[in-house]
Image (cartoon, rainbow, N blue to C red; front, side, top):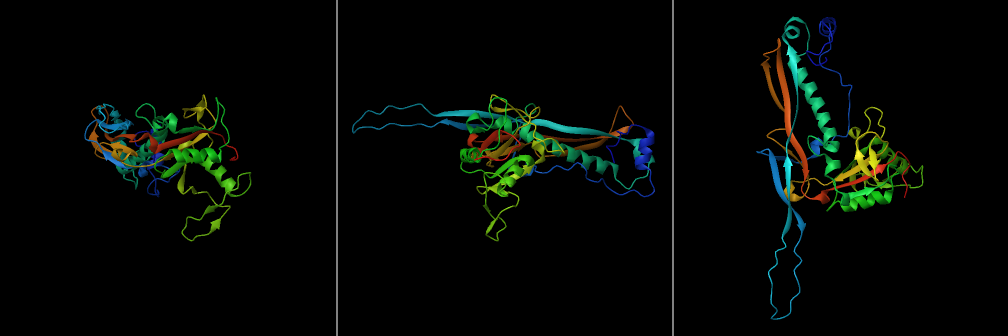
Length: 326
């Protein structure tokens, strides 16, 4: 059922709610795979901001001769990082007339909460990668030193296996997962199937041992590869990122994609994490509306992704939908 209170006419409301034999629930049609929200370790924040210090330059000391004069140095150098929680949510009005006068096997309020929570979760999955207003997503967090540019200028290029290896070596001590659009992962599959110039064989991760080829690539150098619908055009899977001066610049408008690699952990452990306020999704209401013949329900969350060390996140950007090269 569409979100209650959003019918375009009374006739539509009757058609969708008044029926002799209506299937309970809502059939999934908007299906997105490859989310990473559930992978983030959570840091509960009891204030609006989380503040932590990150190493900048370590003291180097000096060699001394016997009976040498020692001079105290003042070279402890750290950078203070401030992470501010963003407020994200949605509110729905449930019209009292619809709730009380039309027959349906669905619990209207429950369906509204379920559909809203699903939509919010998918929006947050995209935001974790691309957001640049409410909070800073992974593309904004990754530093230039942790980026390997595959393209040049505004032109994307085929993924290089050597560049992917170089990026993984930038993530310290080791990446725990890589995330990429299906189109780029499919190009890695193509290489594993031996149909281009970079044939790959990889160890079967099923625990049965042996070598297999012609299968879906699930690991690269023992790092799990997750295919994400949130990094490409919905439904078609077409690459859509834009690069400028050889680096990622925008979520849409172009024809390139990226591979992100990350190591998870709490800020003091130097990993990528998710700061939240109390709980991820909070349901408020239903409460009577003062302005409408309806009750309102609000679903909200306070959150922001962060990283302790810049070495916990890496990126290859400017990748085109073309066969992998050496």
